[in-house]
Length: 99
Image 1 (cartoon, one colour):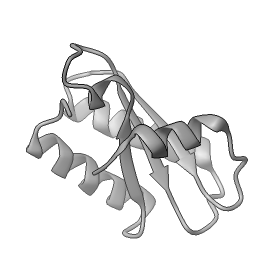
Image 2 (cartoon, rainbow, N blue to C red):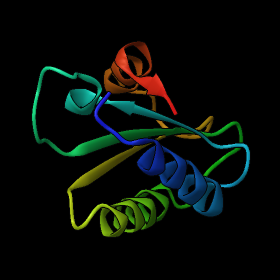
Image 3 (cartoon, one colour):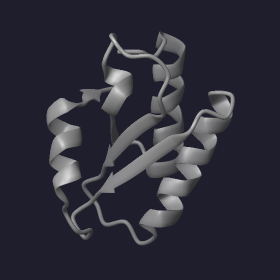
Image 4 (tube, rainbow, N blue to C red):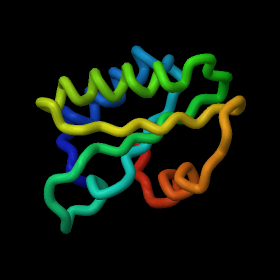
């Protein structure tokens, strides 16, 4: 996985601040693979409760993580009981790493 322990800790902290203490966050995509270079940061946030404004949640977390990582592009998917489930959620959970 191509994140430092400081980056992992900060992503977890920001996720908790923005999405709540029960939120779980997975890193998936190219950053999971040590044999690749560069690339954006792909995150999946899983929540057990409903999310009323998922786009706002995703944008806020992406902006905060991007700022912390010197402007690196960050994509955030949100998984919650009231939101549609897409195949990308399954891929993120199967191939991703829980932070």
